[in-house]
Length: 384
Ligand code: COA
Image 1 (cartoon, rainbow, N blue to C red):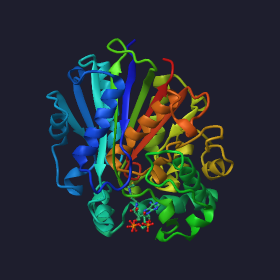
Image 2: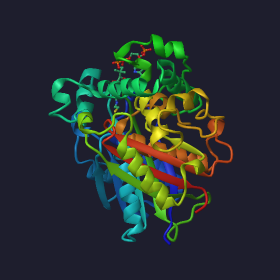
Image 3: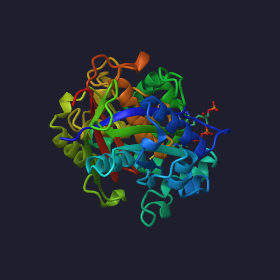
């Protein structure tokens, strides 16, 4: 059986990069991953780039050729787009190509440069990933869409405003330990409750920020290269659902997450209880609560209590978002799925420093596009 292994990782700082362009960020992360893998550039057979909207954010399309040539490479280079799940999907495409045995070694880069636009324009650009005719046209944006999901969850299950806030508090706590995080300040529940309203019930500190950044991971088949500390990508699940919320049968679950997770768990031959830690898509605090439930970490409706009980903090039963998540580490949308993989590899190599999850053997990454229309779930292991 073919084994896909992470041979190298690289990441830039996440935040506002006024002095670095998108191509510079992508190349910086890529070179770090190549150096980490200790391979020659020529050994790379292909590149996949996760990016949501460089054309609208900075006016640059054609990223495959742009970034490959900046790296001095002529191999095939393909851009992958699935809104905020672009990075996760780029990893999946690479995984499938490696398993096909058409290529031996490939570089995945996730990159986004969002802060060149003012918030209003960035918001409109992001809203292009919602349903234009049924949602964006009427003025709803992503904070508004997730606010509806939060309201419904609070109504159905009694999830409290404080429980939502605790997701942000925990993720800022974790992010304070991550040198590449955009926000490294610790916050309290009161800070979240008193921050500016964005879309009721969500406040500013319930939201992931607008960010620049890039992450890269070099994936190979093990018969091509076996790194000193291998981390295996053992399963990849991908599913989609309707983009528009009104067409869904439920607003208290993300069906694409449930389906992608089921496919990944089956492929890996494991159950949710066996996951030691996870990087999940907390674009808004409610999104992390939904992820706990839809990934099977707790019962439907219990996500609020799950975070309140400390189950997902660094010392908890299943630490979630040790990187700081999208909330504190930042959310350069196309880069996020690859950043989640970088954090997972660091954890499984036991190189996560102060935020190391002790004894971690199996990690899960969960990357969502839009308000849940695309989901990619990957499972990573220390031993195959
Ligand atoms: N978390 C923590 N602090 C944040 C923040 C966030 N999400 N967003 C901004 N800040 C801070 C800024 O650093 C700044 O701090 P300072 O005054 O100390 O410099 C302050 O809050 C105001 O920043 P500003 O850039 O003016 O905020 P804004 O009002 O323009 O944008 C949001 C805030 C929440 C509207 C914006 O971050 C946003 O739209 N987030 C959601 C992004 C999104 O939808 N992503 C896709 C998900 S599907």
